[in-house]
Image (cartoon, rainbow, N blue to C red; front, side):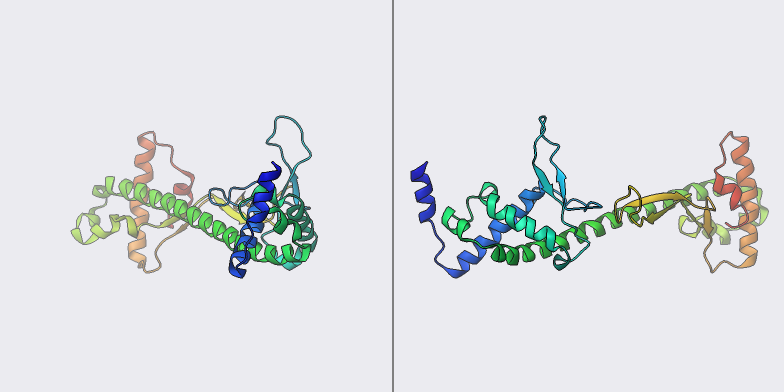
Length: 261
């Protein structure tokens, strides 16, 4: 073992650029290691309400180990208590996360200020990654919402087409456009998503759902003329009746938006 350590100490980084890259890699490996996160395969964890550390519950037997939870909603400079604690942890445990970056002598020679300086760079990059995670989630949520709304439009278009023959004026081909999916009104969900203020047991920035005052909001295209709106209302009267006759449980938004379609 002593010979291995001696060999390890002999592998220094004489080139300034090599030393700089090695130091950055060393601090980054320790930064992610202290969070208990695989840098390339896992998402960064959300911050906690108070403090910067959470117990390690992965072991079957209780331990005193803790995981770092920096607040990526704040800048590095506003978390001095956290980065001082983490810098000390990197100083003491850094080699346990990566022995390929620095040798023993180089790691032991690091000062807290040097570690904090590099930690700021690592944190800045991780913070950008965390924000991108949030954007990706928002895009996924918006995609799912669009799918749900399109599904409602499709069901509405099919239901109207089924009873088209009951409205004499709509037999003309000039009204075919009324049965296209894109020309149906947009029905918003009965649940309204809001971002919590982080009160109570909720985490800051956590998405929660609250029931809206009006369970369904329908938004017809603004370009509809009044006589076309009347035709849609007449068509929907037959559509709802057909649904009831067929034993279909009419959805709440059908009743609420009968004349707002």
